[in-house]
Length: 132
Ligand SMILES: [Zn+2]
Image 1 (tube, rainbow, N blue to C red):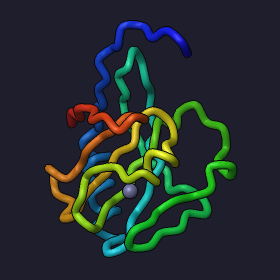
Image 2 (tube, rainbow, N blue to C red; image 1 turned 180 degrees about the horizontal axis):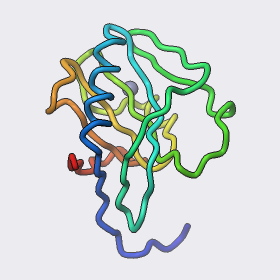
Image 3 (tube, helix red, strand yellow; image 1 turned 90 degrees about the vertical axis):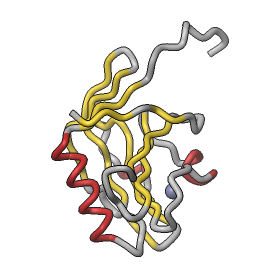
């Protein structure tokens, strides 16, 4: 795309129960990375996360979590992925940005508490999250 429209405010809203499920899933996977698909809707840059899907054929280790995107059924309700960083860093790695899927990439750092969830766009810019 050559011309960009005026940049619109990106925002992620996360349902409280989805937020809690993400945290407990990541705790369960620790010390390995956990990865989940985010389901929801997006409208005018606002991403509304309402559910989670465990990706098929996922693999994970202490520094790696992934799944072959080609196995994913085409589903417009998939808005992104969330994965954990047992190392405690919330920054997306180069690999994370390479494997970007959907509209948002959320990263949960250990110790997986309420302040451990961060959302990033395709370029590695932070997106504010509100718990609803
Ligand atoms: Zn990562």
